[in-house]
Amino acid sequence: MQEKSTPQALQYDVLIVGSGLAGLSAALLLSEKYRVAILTKRAVREGSSGWAQGGIAAVWDKADSFAAHVDDTLIAGAGLCDMAATQFVVEQAPQAIAWLQALGVPFSTENNGDLHLTREGGHSARRIVHVTDATGAAVQATLIERVQKSPNISLFENHTLVDLITSDKVAGDTGTNRRCVGLYALDEVTDEVLTFSAPHTLLATGGAGKVYLYTTNPDTATGDGIAAAWRAGCRVQNMEFIQFHPTCLYHPHAKSFLISEAVRGEGGRLLLPDGTRFMLNHDARAELAPRDVVARAIDFEMKKGGFDCVYLDISHQSLAFIQEHFPNIYARCLELGIDISRQPIPVVPAAHYTCGGVLADLQGRTDLPGLYAIGEAACSGLHGANRLASNSLVECMVFARAASHDIEHRPSTHCLALPTWDDSRVTDADESVVISHNWDELRRFMWDYVGIVRTNKRLDRAAHRIALLEDEIQEFYANFHVTRDLLELRNLVQVADLIVQSARARHESRGLHFSRDYPEMLDQALPTTLTPTASTPRS
Image 1 (cartoon, rainbow, N blue to C red):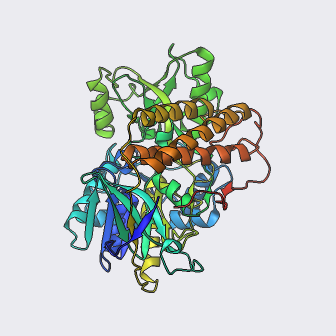
Image 2: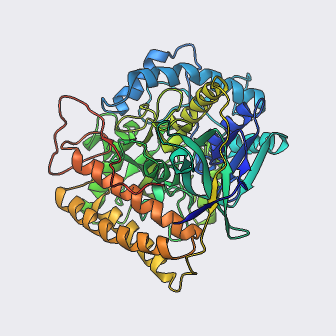
Image 3: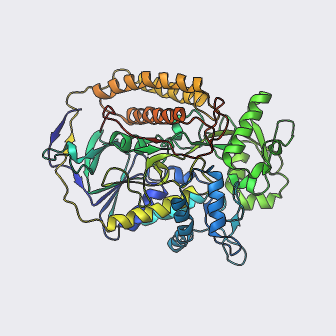
């Protein structure tokens, strides 16, 4: 793509890509001192954070302890969690909850006014702070209201990240002090690619669940930040660890509706179609085992019995209890003709969370100076080989604060005059069906070959198909005007390649990565780190 130099970039102190909990938290924290731009590719409310039902893990009860929360996280992470990152997040979690309380988030409380704490799989104590069964939506609504009132925050909805801009692409820069200086974003309203300039850019773009056919994620989860950071020269880590949530509602009219882990935490039982409980055959913790164990157990039973789904039964609890604790799940299921107070819920596993991502340190800094990554887009070391339930939202807030603090202590950097996007040599696509066909093909073979259970042969087949798709998409990208669908497909194929590369490199089964060819876990737990090479296509 040819570019021409003009000084028409939109200039800010900090650019934040993504409007979930990580991005909104960072924007609010930074807006006290800086002019901040938030770019989000759809409406501000459409990120993954708003879909989070369960809650936020934090040590709040006096009978609980940081050590216990750390231990639970390490156990779920199958030996691959970074100890410093784990302790950092766990110890900062109560402060994050207190911050949200101060902002006015209406957390569920006991009759005496104390926070109501629930328990989820993998936790040894009740430590999940929540807003009934719609925690993410409530937190996001509170933050959005604050963001929209801030005079120092500019919100750019319907703006899709195209690529990051690095200083070595700017005329006169030798590249010896290469850093991120801004980004290109497609404005879908004007169909124009805009240039944004800032000394600090923060990726809070979420994960890549849409790389799979079945997912609990919204349509926005296309790995944009991970792919853009990789193209800009950043390392990624642990991309093979894709968490499949065990209980996604199985119904033809329910797209990506999650049945919260808290349902199992409050006594929900997993059943075969004939009503038989099966989790004790797979793990002594039964329904309270970590998500990877439960998802594999369900996958095993479905394949063994040829079932379309299994069932999650909470009907032994009273109607009043269910309506108090799970009002949204109760209402949504009732809309579909399922009364969960009287009958079990049909469920299947679905891709849920990207545990790996852009390698970032405890301040959210990536390999590229000026570029930060936080939340699901990042690999902080907290989640290891499997994320412990409800550790995601608190990670967003803790690293939003850490990155903001680091930015505040960075010296001011002069903004360079950046090149604007030049699409004078491309044309409108004449066969957009190519994009939709490739998108469908990618998601189907990733589900079949790189899902809950993997083999070398399946991974080889996926790698072969990815290579063919990459060639097709790169040709399309080079010759036609960019669209959101094209940009998302380009990013999904890149992320799929990173997932497959990482899975092929891990010759063991650990956490969320289960291989029939390497069913045993090695004695030493090592992360999978991928480094861009000279031949990697750059931004």
